[in-house]
Length: 344
Image 1 (cartoon, rainbow, N blue to C red):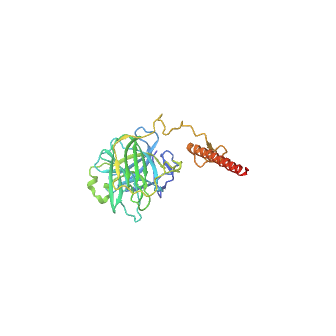
Image 2 (spheres, rainbow, N blue to C red; image 1 turned 30 degrees about the vertical axis):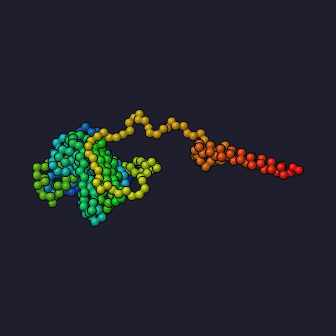
Image 3 (tube, rainbow, N blue to C red; image 1 turned 60 degrees about the horizontal axis):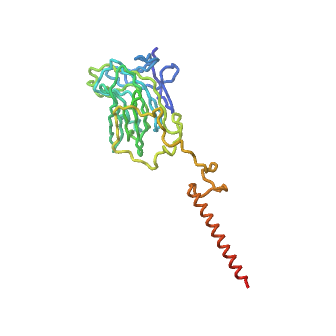
């Protein structure tokens, strides 16, 4: 079974969307195709069960892009997950084939580089991050390890978009292993929030680049599957817990770092290990002198004391006893003086 994908407008994304290409009735994303490329649904290769989307760009002198487009995302925090597969006969080229990109449409319609792009370059994966500094586009290239043709890659991108006053972050995992990260500006801070595109795009195959970049190149073919997008902002359906004082960002407006940090050294992804000892001291008993739901310690007559510490209770008690003793002493002296005046 082969199904051609297409649509009249980009699909609008909600807090949680997914595309697994298994159901013929599922409304699929809009396709952005330049030239005679195609995005078709058919049997997944490489021993993967079910269906997947096959993407191709023919080397015909004019085709350079075949992508699925998902719009409607806000400029917050999201996790993007997807699987992709390079065939075993994938041709290594010293040029970028972008397989996923986050693109910020500009208000003036200006066509510029995507803010974030995952590509295969030669025999390796890499991530490019772009931002503006003084009106000029800056770029950071993050290596993500060797490409493995004939292997399904499981990707996850945790992205928080930067703003003009706050830095952003990107964390990348591949097959459950941390592959790279970026901290700092990751956006142009103008126009629409970045939207998501996935498929195949060869910018050096644009017709205006000339035929030299296409010489000796074969048709670009790859497969994509299991696309998921979830909001990871506090209070979202994916992360429903509201922000607590422990996770609230500091007040004020932090300034983005002028030198963003990017890492690409593969290392095991961090996760909570089973059996790990939790932080804090949950076995510590609660104070016995808590009164009702107020959280204040109470005196013996149930009157809340000014101090909630044990020292405050002792101080208040001693002060009361001292005052009573002094009053009794003064009363005895006054009575003795009156008795002396009454004597003949």
